[in-house]
Amino acid sequence: MSLGKATPIQIKEFKKISSNSRIMKNIGRGIPWSSEYVDELVKQTKQDEANNNPNYFHWLLLAKKENAKERVVGYVSLRPYKDNDLQIRTFVSPSGQGHGSAGGEIVMYEYYYNLGGDKKIYSVVKATNVKSVNMREKNPNWLLVSTSQVHGSLHKEFLYLDGQSDESSCTS
Image 1 (tube, one colour):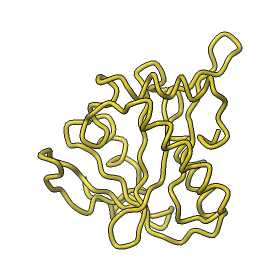
Image 2: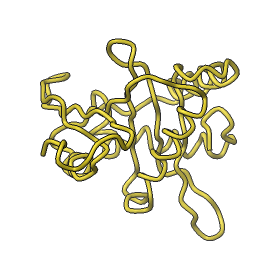
Image 3: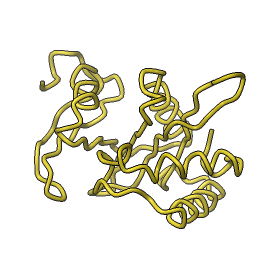
């Protein structure tokens, strides 16, 4: 579901997980998000969605079904990145891990390309985030293009190949 179309309850759940330091340690600078920051994200997302432009910041909330209810467990987003490209970012709370977050990324790619998007998509992952690094390295649609220091931590940068590669071209 889109963050711009999320219900107040879904936004409340999103705020809860994005303010948790344990969950946010591998996101950006590792700092939990404030309620005000999330409110600003929702506001900006609604404006971006109204413009229907593929090169704006896009958000999808990831949900997990529990007791006949869907509960927000994370997000997938596309945001502007270097040289006029985009970066995909995904976070999933521990309770949502192993329940198809990669499917959320696939939905995001389809959504973006169906809007007519044509930018390159990158993923930048902290090297200490072993699960995410392994997920990228094992997927033939991701190519490791660099390793560098970002905000004082070692990060790996991957390029999404949109199925245009075979496994032999990936760096591990």
